[in-house]
Length: 447
Image: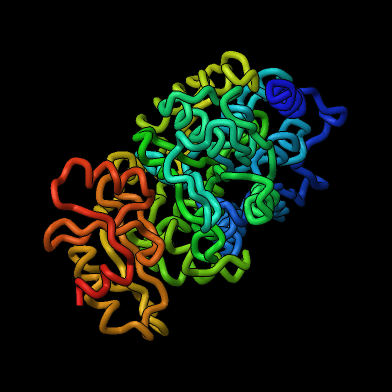
């Protein structure tokens, strides 16, 4: 039954559409409408979606073309990458943003239908895989992945979070097809299933794990960064659109770079803007998109990310979601190289910022960084009523997490945070005298 469900999901993604002859790019010659598909609540794509739209940078870049045409942008919001791929295959979306696994399905779909697409830029990435997390209900007794054997696990088949789940289960010695009861659900449906008890765990992408943890509706079971494999979201464009309208695509990529610079320079303001547009708490947005957030934003198509994409193909093939995919043909960074000019090489060489602990004081337009989690705890202990949010990086993976949701370990005078219980236990097992303590205890020790 589980294999049938996966096969049906694959068929849904890969069967031809009846309306494949249209084109998203519309107009009477002097007026051109460009259709952009994005995921407003998948906040790892905001520089090509939610934030970019709110800033109006793409429209400004189009107005600056001065080619005798009037441009309009039709922004279409979706919950996942699959419907964006379907609309691109039907010729109804020109440019779309989605995660790494959906991007590969996008490539396969275009290849299958003779309507190729191209990966033209990256939005946000995490070199270790920390963008995806497996969570369980707050009262769950599960403490590691081994406990998921035979359990019901909700995920979105074909998504980056599903890819993380498959790999994590394999490393834990559990067959990802027969070892669990996989529920193929949209993120919101899976979140409801977890709360209702009809799912034992949920594996999802940004911002769902952080949101549920922040709301007290879930706790982390597995930090995707334990895989130590890059994961990212990116921008795909229909190849025929890119060839016909290269200046428009370059305008989009210039605008994306501007939105990235805005996010880097004003991360708190950017988080507030995204929160206002999506209804997500700004504190959750900042967890991922902040100055030291889980996601690093950069439009450059880095070789490490392309290499990870090649490795991802085998996971999709094993799940019968795609066949072989020519990743090298799919990746095309010439448009973003041209759009960013001499600055592209610098972006290509740049990496994520160093991990840091941060406090977002109430009413503040900036966060405060601390040299260690213990110093952050000392500050929180002195300003309990004045802290909007506090963030700490996992001591082994570097994944940022809410300080009050982290698993804390006391090792002598050191106070170390971890996203998941298993990584905390691994640390205590290797450090004599180290032990797990409560958040309240950690605060007391730091004050």
